[in-house]
Length: 628
Image 1 (cartoon, rainbow, N blue to C red):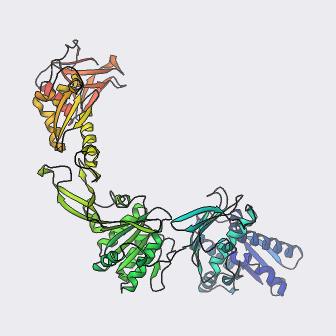
Image 2 (image 1 turned 120 degrees about the vertical axis):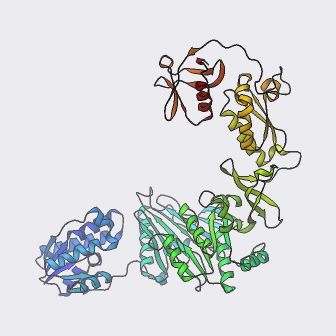
Image 3 (image 1 turned 30 degrees about the vertical axis):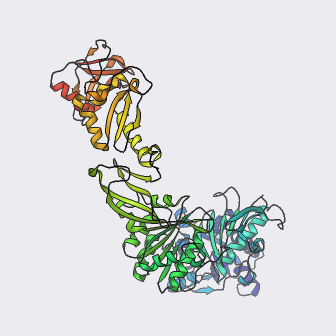
């Protein structure tokens, strides 16, 4: 009799068991090298299954030495790609091929492998897998560390077990006094193997994620993360469970939120810091919606929301929440709870489902309510944000701290008055007071969030003034060489103080440059020298005229002939590499530049500086360069 055992049969010790029963006495056992490779990989990863399988291989070798059976190692080692595709059946296919080649019975404890073998015409002997670990009724050993007020237990090799205990508003990270001291590696291995085995065999558990170095298990109401080297520096187990079961009535604004949820399908963000109680509130919302005759589903990875059986919990389909969303659109839920919205892809999926008409409740991390909304900026078109999210609920210490209503209007942003500055503005309004607290809009090609917190008479502290000052400084510094100061004089007026030598250049010919800046910003700007500031000396009011004050005569410079290419205006300065120089036209200052390593100054065509330089060349003005 010829036999080819697969990995599952070797791990369960089925070959030596069959020999002991007399069924395989005198048989020839062909052990695939693919099985040996799998077992070595599992043992190297610290899994007991790998060591159990290697122990069975040793028993097979001993039986062969005794002459009870004949054993041969056959086939080839799996490639790295085949090992990575083990879950897709690549190694199982290698083993079936060897069974065909040696005209052997395929021995397996893997039901799928057995059925696949039968489908391909193999003689298959299927035996039930050996139950590993504890039974579901026994529970987990680490459950003894949980008390009624324990939210999470934290175990790591070489450290004393710890737990987070208390109520959600007052949690403390404490040592577990009834533990047996620091956890050694053997104990951690036992706990980790027990958790993974129980998740595989229990009807109350499943493995949510299994990657090299990290396994996430959902068992009963525990979410357990098991990290192993090399992903972590030591074995670490973190077990979390909810310590509170709430209803919407337990929260502030309960009546208002109920009306808001049932008025129409909404886009809601539940935000808060880790451990603040976001998921607990999301569960309360899900139960309320379900009891209000809405079809409710969840999208979770991992699936750990504690909701009633009527609410179906979905995870990432084929590893991608977009596939889950496609499936849910066919299911047609009224509301979907998305726990959690974190990465860019999550925000895109959330927005896509919301714009398809599904009510969406997303859970996201944020330290402030406004931060949750800002996470959509750049991920969703600005004007679409209020259609995707119209309500933000911020949770702190297990309670509803803030509720925002999110709307959009076409208006002049708060703090600006010019009518031609009207634009779409997202208003973030405090749900309790009805007072706008933030505005989000595009300002000078940037999306800005402006807090509306300035008091009359103290405008220097308002968000719009801070923004205006920054933008004015940025614009002036792009053309000035020296120090720049900005003082706001009102909603649409500012005074800019620059160095005396910068006056004429900042204002520009005929006032053209400062007029362009004023038009871009929607603010009237008076340009003066630093000496004109209160307490200063001298008078050179740049705002009085475009030519600016008289300046000290400059030394004659080196005359140059700029070259105009398709992309640049180039000034050759081979003997002045690294020097900072001023470029002038008929002794009128144009700009300051540093000569590059190639011995030239390059000005990109299309820029304001290049246009002035080209205009000077066209008008046959003398271009000179002097040391700065």
